[in-house]
Image (cartoon, rainbow, N blue to C red; front, side):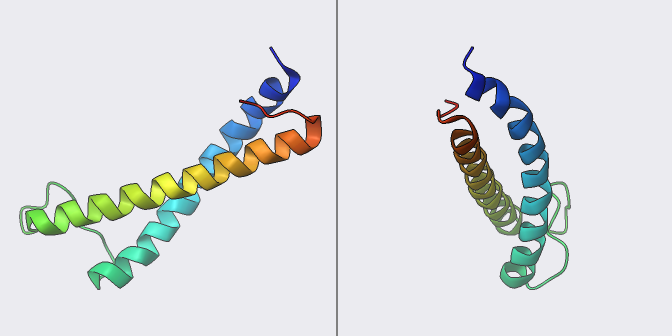
Length: 88
């Protein structure tokens, strides 16, 4: 196994956890703008419409995917700078 892949595993683990926390915070702020309320609807909240539930899920998914991609790319770039090779 390449040294860059070995180095990337702990980096990827730690940055993945951080990405989840960042994405959750970004989603909360985004939902305040999109939904005009503090809390996003829960999928099992019978007082919420399908539209609200699906919009919240789509916004949350898009934010989590974008943050994860940015963090993964940054981690891979950092490993390349440290080792000279791309971890993929």
